[in-house]
Length: 579
View 1 (spheres, one colour):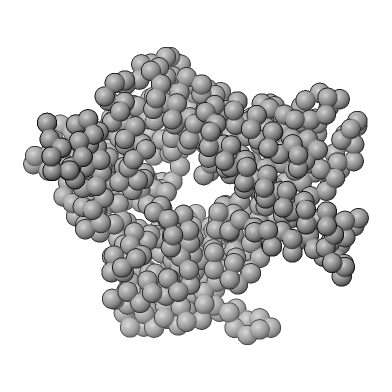
View 2 (tube, rainbow, N blue to C red):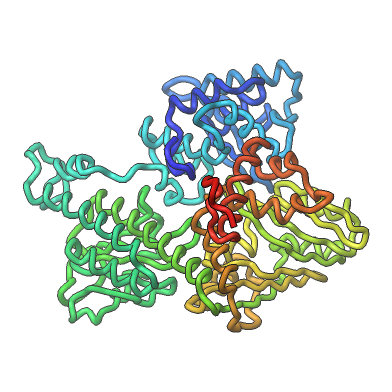
């Protein structure tokens, strides 16, 4: 599995090596259910023998698994015969009742089991449940050529776009093959050899996207991004537009007679279409367009970073192939990630920024619901991203018993686990493992940081810091779309850290890996550096779903890099480098 951040998927052979590292029947079952059935940690803890069913088909008997999702909802997952056999054998061997869970532990413990297995391998350390689900998707899509819509259904992904990262970008040969047997007049297959202009266009598309990637690396503003996209794609398409979330054109390269904006009904039509195929690119073929683009088809791709959509890319052409759609989806992801990176860098380096203060009474915010029922106050101390897109919330609670807080918060759908870090009599510090939607997630994905979040009597006040170039309306609309009972209270300019503090922040942002940043921040917020310690290394490792040796490894490397920045870059590897 290549890449320090685990960007590439486990291969089939790597998965088998990982599974062989399991030392107990339960570990082996957990790895199989995540990597071969596509279950997430919380789903693994809910399935029971009664949920495993047989279904007759023309090809024989299939094994299906009903995966409960709460409120009677769920999905059907496919179970390979050997995994189904192991499930039934495990149930019989452990005398499980039909309604007893196969894996009777917390979701966090499931993640720890996977971490323990991966730590026994030489080159597959830090594999998580998320990497196993990625392998599940990759294996079905790439090796077994299963319809993406089926993979989406059995794996529980919300959209086809979510599966796009698990596929490799097309090579020149892939694109040539896609064009080779298609008639340029009808788009239907033909036996003739590929035309020269088809092969030439394939090469042009790849060169275009390659140049765009290099140019985006130099972009420092959203305006640079829009202008760069239009310039690089203009040779491949008859018109190009980059639009914001509300469809307002930010940049374009289109014939003068079009007025510079996307034709009126194209975005409306694209918005009404379901995601078209794996790429998530919508194509409008019957738009009412006059003038130089009359008769053109229009493709609309989201500018997406994780689950956040920053706008859309729209291009016009006589007709679009599957290769066009795949490449446009790739461009959309690259542009979305670039926009997010620019926003975060602005916030880090700016002397001034913008603080947005919001108020929420929405019961979907789990802290709002808990505060209402318990009559207590919550104060967020910090948030740390961890494996499987979860967040660690470190929260101080006042005015409620520790047991009541733990019981109430762990009942929330968004919370996987909770523990007491330290009890101070008048208040207590808790750690909540949050995997569902939260206010913090929305703000962070919009390029912000959560400065303050307090909740009392069912009212949450949250302040997020952004660069001064932030699209305030876009941030507020994103929050309101997820939590309707939320509104903007104020917007004000704030001073950002400068000098040496900014230098340390740059080190944390640029030099530390994502896992090192997460471990260091979680250790700080959980009281690991205090005396006496608020959390042990074992507790912190369990919360982050990694082993203790792995935690210590990341923590020491992170500390060394930060200390290098604090002490003016002294190189600890050079004996004579001393002050």
